[in-house]
Length: 265
View (tube, rainbow, N blue to C red):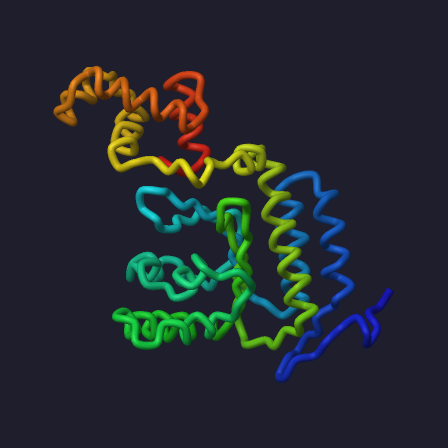
């Protein structure tokens, strides 16, 4: 059925209309997709209809020791060479969208994040990043945070030419971002591990993180004690504390859970 006027909205200088009906249908279709490739294909089709040329769906991992986000891409399409430039110039360290994402509670426009860092020490580097992005066709966009019980879990970034989205479109795209994120994790067997997150009231200490990293490298208690210049019994005491905090039955399971929760990589 062709979309009616009530099903679509038009933005200024916009060559395609956003089909509200297609966004709603996508939420249903995603549940029926048999594999990750099908999920991504359906998502890209609707994003193209919405007028967005580029996108990135990310899973974010925040370590208690670092208090910073690390991103793992789930799907995406960006301008040629842009990711290489982004990495080479280390823009991730000052990216205003990434920094704003850590405390954003709702979807926001890229330019809103720039406005939030007026007077910031890295302001000029941020502006240079936006100039580089503009030169690669990333003139503006939107970022949709995906939250879980313990904070930010992922995000969907949409970019390209400037597009004015209505509140209804933003709400539907926010639902699409969350649905796509969880459907991909379900199909890859990662959803259950992500849902069983560490209690926020029991963060690991710096020493516990050090021991956990050495443990993940296969070191014994004796080897770790020599590395840290503490007694073997003290290492065992820390390890018992780690197992309790991670609710692990043994050291091997503690390491496995640490990887799942993004504490180590």
